[in-house]
Image 1 (spheres, helix red, strand yellow):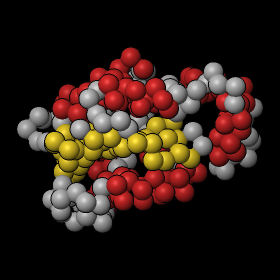
Image 2: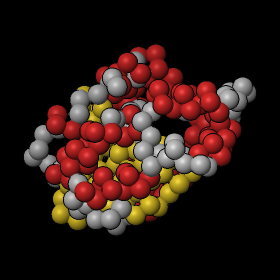
Image 3: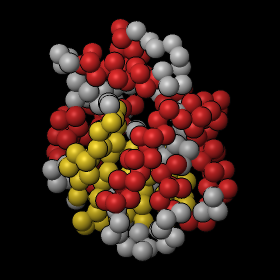
Image 4: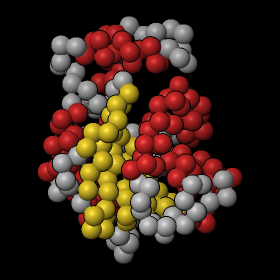
Amino acid sequence: MNTNDIFNSEFSRQYDASNSRFSAINDNLHFLVALLLRDLPTDARILCVGVGTGNEIIYHAVKNHGWHFTGVDPSPDMLEVCASKLEQAEIRDRCTLIEGYLDNIPDNVAYDAVLCLLVTHFIQTSDRGDIYRQIKKRLRTSGRLIVAEIAGDTTAGNFDEQLSGWAALQAVSNPNIPMLDDLKTLLRKRLLLLPPEKTEELIFNAGFSPPHHFFQSLLIHAWIANT
């Protein structure tokens, strides 16, 4: 999947507004992530993979004035929006933005934590294990990985029940609730869902501690794991 085909200029400018229906979920997720990172050094370095428009950087940077952030994203359009928001938040001087992927990040910095939030469901299943292995190489000893993704077992007998709640969420910004079959087709076309336990296996097999599943809201799941 070529994410640049999705996150083009027009989409990037409208991204935050189009995802406003997730705001309550995202606020809770960021709050919990902040709790899990509360004891990092005052000069911690944080890597944000698939940084998008930079919302996680802004959330944590305004609360931790000594933290420095590196954001990497393959979409130049998303990074342009991100840079503008960081300037407005007056935190641009503590942020490095890199267009590309993990292997485009200089390897002379070890990070205290890596955030990979709502990114991996766009990545081919066969590539995800390597993503986690690359992340591990960039973390300090006892560094932390936090992953959030849209996940689910599409073959499970109760998946339609899970989808009904997801459809209701979509209806927050769209009064026409999609039919479940249409929603399944959309998920398969745009996203690459894995069962949550498969994601946990991939993280563990990349050399991390057994992931702790600390968050779920409908189909959005999140884990923390240590090196």
